[in-house]
Length: 238
Ligand code: ADP
Ligand code: MG
Image 1 (cartoon, helix red, strand yellow):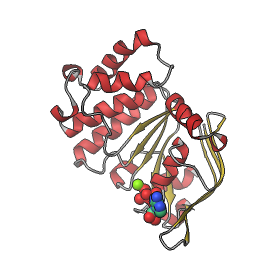
Image 2 (cartoon, rainbow, N blue to C red):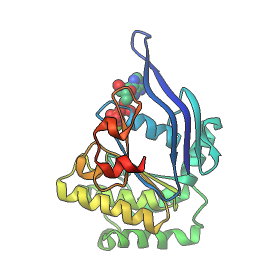
Image 3 (spheres, rainbow, N blue to C red):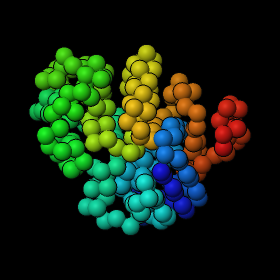
């Protein structure tokens, strides 16, 4: 599903210094796998997710997603790839304030041709109902609690039946109980929609819910489970 080979990301700093923030020799994630991406703040989690989703590009290396060579695509082709293949749950939701919950989701479908126009309204409604928001279809984001906004954002991420569902620190701004609910929703939604799930987090409660944890160190390199001091469950799997 995801194959990375020799990935590096180098940023040029304010005084033109070169800063290598990500260095991954090899990473394979199978279709349907549920993987957590862990590491301290600044370890390159968001950078890596942005490279996989095509929001930004790597300085070198190959990124294959669903047998598509993402590293060869120009910006426009990456936008199309993203609409076709990836659902993203952003930490700040990024819902459009002028549109209702239902409209936020049908709009996302209009950026891709995957769901035929005649099915979009019903699919948006079904997704919101599945996530317990059947009574909030016509509410605008500011009329919803932050937990409800996040569920609208999740429905939107799932709208185009993405093969890959990505979430960046989805529990960073919520309490423990809401975090548990979000992780459960991500897991059940990815299972029901047959999507591969990749979640960046440094929240131990999140990491414990995943069978496989990829750990980055402060240099943006993958750490072997024994070096990271992870429990045996993860150590055995790698
Ligand atoms: P994480 O998500 O794990 O907290 P990030 O991927 O956001 O880490 O950042 C990794 C490193 O890259 C950090 O050291 C950060 O300062 C640096 N960085 C991120 N974005 C930029 C940028 N646009 N320009 C320069 N450096 C950046
Ligand atoms: Mg981040």
